[in-house]
Image (cartoon, rainbow, N blue to C red):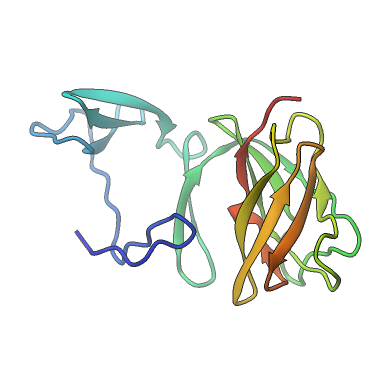
Amino acid sequence: MAEPVKPVYGVYDFKAQLVIPMSQNPPITPIDGSVYIDTDDGRIYGWQNGAWRASRISAVPGEGLVFTQDELGVTTISLAPKEVENVVLESPWTVPAGQPGPQRMRLATGAVQLRGQVQASGPLGKTITILPSGWRPAVSMVSICVAGSGQQNVQIDPDGRVYPINGTGSPTRLGGVLFIADGN
């Protein structure tokens, strides 16, 4: 297995390919942490405490995992969204030229994630967007997002307001914003 490089915002970047075996039958000699994809049902199974346990994640395209590659060649594995809606931006925020508009996604786990890039020329604290009821966290939280050549800390409040609180500026990639919605 390749040695991981330092974690970037809590995610390890392995300089190798992650291969999850696919089979109709589980591996014969698993150890805790072993995984495989069952080709009959498309689910990912993990070995834990002496037993195979089915995850809530499916490897069937469009049902569980999404594999995306950015312009730098970095591949991200994420949960497929169950619900996707476009984000309405507040002034002075705009979408950088050539980029798709930002979106909010409700994942299969119930978590909410934002994606897309935004930019603004203005002071910190200007609201990027206001999330509607049902898409908001129960308490204020801060997410770290990539911005320009550095990072941007973005706060999400229970009233739905999403705004930068410090960082290097714009454009800001919203992919780092991930939280459990409180349902209100």
